[in-house]
Length: 247
Ligand SMILES: NC(=O)c1ccc[n+]([C@@H]2O[C@H](COP(=O)([O-])OP(=O)(O)OC[C@H]3O[C@@H](n4cnc5c(N)ncnc54)[C@H](OP(=O)(O)O)[C@@H]3O)[C@@H](O)[C@H]2O)c1
Image (cartoon, rainbow, N blue to C red; front, side, top):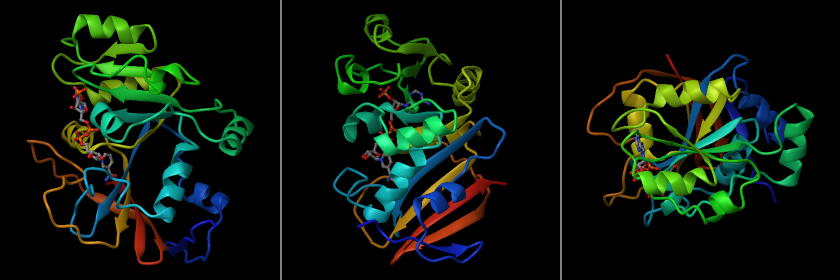
């Protein structure tokens, strides 16, 4: 059974269907636009037992899947790809048909961010990819790993020691990929905030207190205060699914 989601704000509505949710989560008509998606506990933990999955419920997973649907590219940093055991970026048949009806490719492009290039070219992320992925790295990345990944992905250097995220956005836009949806993780989000690259945050507030020493959703050595305004609030039982845009 599909997890029930109601809209609290701006217009109250009960039991939204997928089309309603896709309308709520539509990208602005003009890009480039970078949207992040995270789940957090009430006390700010981004993980339970080292992964985000333990915090999310069926409603969070429903929105997680729907958010990929209108995206030109899904951007994920290497830490999350490794920890969460990502497979190829592939939406289901219904989502694929929905995309093609709207002139989009059958699947979004998988774009990855890594300094070390420590990603296995034989993994399903690349071997099973329906669209050639893009790996964003720095000039200083190890040459052998770069050559190995270049056989299975476009490898693009943006920045010397750190991936320059506005440059990533510009490179994606140059490929016609202006609607960028990012699934994290915290270090990538911290770097994006430091570089002023984030336009929107979709945040699931899971009704749990975790304590412990799990990471927050944004992690960086450098504080980057970024004012946000609320543009949508959904509710699934005790959980809130919030959407904020940068002021
Ligand atoms: N709550 C949630 O919604 C959520 C979402 C995603 C992830 N998570 C959790 O977050 C944890 C992972 O945290 P994390 O901070 O390690 O994840 P991360 O941000 O996904 O990955 C960090 C890695 O990404 C690369 N990277 C990120 N920004 C970079 C930049 N500007 N330049 C160059 N490389 C960059 C580096 O890869 P290399 O090491 O390859 O150089 C870096 O070590 C996991 O436990 C995961 O489950 C939670």
